[in-house]
Image 1 (tube, rainbow, N blue to C red):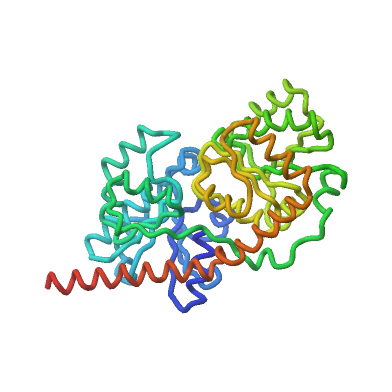
Image 2 (cartoon, rainbow, N blue to C red; image 1 turned 30 degrees about the vertical axis):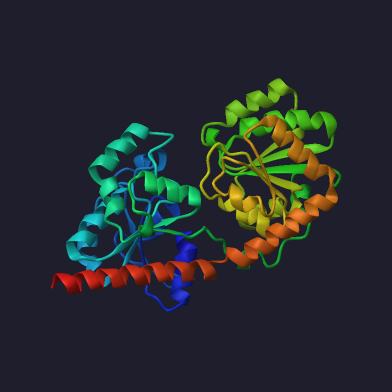
Length: 379
């Protein structure tokens, strides 16, 4: 999201600098420490982590040279955009931005509240730095009304919050692959009714509930196949055991993670895309499936559920309801086509980065103007 937004802002005539860690190994090998490189017009710095284990496994970046570079470079910026507030990057940016009276915007991307994993550590970080990062922001960007409520629970005034959804690069979906490519690669028959899950194989994604519902679906729709695409983050063995116990191994396939054209082929060949999440703020996979014209089913616990109600099916976090929704879409071709066409139209109308960039641009302009007014009043 940072890359696509930055690229679009550059196209609109802005100078954009990105500070990131070196966790991506490819960049670590090719980019010298603290030397800016140009990525499609975006000036980009990669900071070495003191510990890539902490950055990768504990999601705690440790860019030990960041404060020094931030101190040297910050005066050249009109506004800062912080993607997450519970990081060393955000803490350093907050310190120097408030010291130099430079406005900043916070976009937490689903991590506003200290919930799920490492709650105690998150609460400790918030009490020391995170809460102040939120309070001193000129504006805060929420992905959905649900995330807006989370900011309010953290004590943020409503007039400081703006809702801007995630977007996708629509150009990547202009020419969709020919149907059947994914099925050929993964030995799926043209008569198979493919249920696709694409995302991290994590407990929070609700894959175990999907498997339970799929086991019931197979009893009435023998040709149904469940394809699980994505990296294992510790939950795959649990799901595999469940599949074995239910006796549906022949109808379930794991592909591992897929990217770019391989991922798009999976969407195009699926008969329905399912996101059975226990919690999700604004998953891009829903937009991607929509851009491919694939019917969508999500649970009501998904933060994007209100949007999906206009173009797809929303069910409670319940295996029976999920089974019924899957059966409805897979047994009614007209329903599937109607949902797919609605999803494609909405994504193309509302979620391209040209529109997202315009919204963010207005937030920047307000933040800069507000900071200048404050400065004029204080002087």
